[in-house]
Amino acid sequence: METRLKIPKNHPRADSIRIRENLIEGEERSIVAKAGLFAHGRGEAFDYFIGEASMPTALSAARAAASSLLLASHAVISVNGNMAALVPEALVELSMESGAPLEVNLFYRSRKRELAVRDALLAAGATNVLGLGARTATIPELFSERRKVDPDGIYRADVVVVPLEDGDRTEALKRMGKFVITIDLNPLSRTAQSADITIVDNITRAIPNIISAIRELRSCDAESIRSIARGFDNKKNLSEVIIFIRDRLTALAEEERD
Image (cartoon, rainbow, N blue to C red; front, side, top):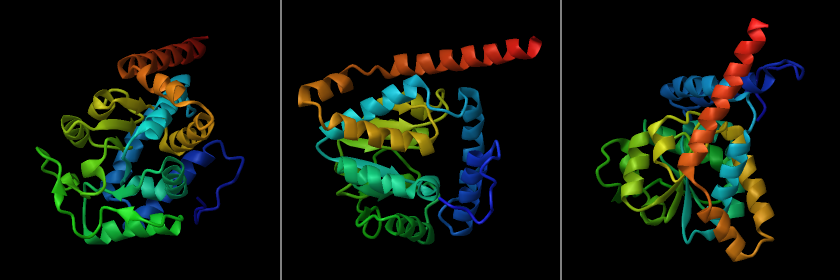
């Protein structure tokens, strides 16, 4: 997405600055909660650790996520403010490719923010956005505003994509028997540890990676797709991420000593 700030294309931090500006503008438009700005800063620190690029583990996890979406009976993509500000077009594209509808779900919920997030998705090309209006379903044992879900969306979904998620809802969705796919730059978070598939990557890279994987897998037979989904081990995935970060930071430290 373009920003009001003119960012030189050759600036070494161009992508990072563009993301920050989109979030600031999103906050001004009530799409992003102020707390979302803090959450992004925490995630950006981890993005530095991984080198601001998709790791091999992230690509494997995106492929597993794509296979799970293709196999789902009723998948749903949960959308919060940061996602709507950063990747609205990619979310709409993912929804179209996977057949999974978009559902607005906010921790800092207000009618104004619900409509702002919905409008950002509609402006990006969405034709149907769930999670607004009459919300009669709730996630058991969850007491934040995120417990309110669409009865035809997350509540009856078998697979739920919950990027940039809070751990409480991920754990509650798992207790409901949902298969949870998340995108989280922090491999140690409760969300990352609780999900069935964790893509440790920046959402601006992860969503396009899932879309690419879905398109690739469409030419595969059902058994091959099932094999990819069944063969994914999230604990191994997260362990490999932590080893990758350790090795990268160790190499950087050694370069500094030299």
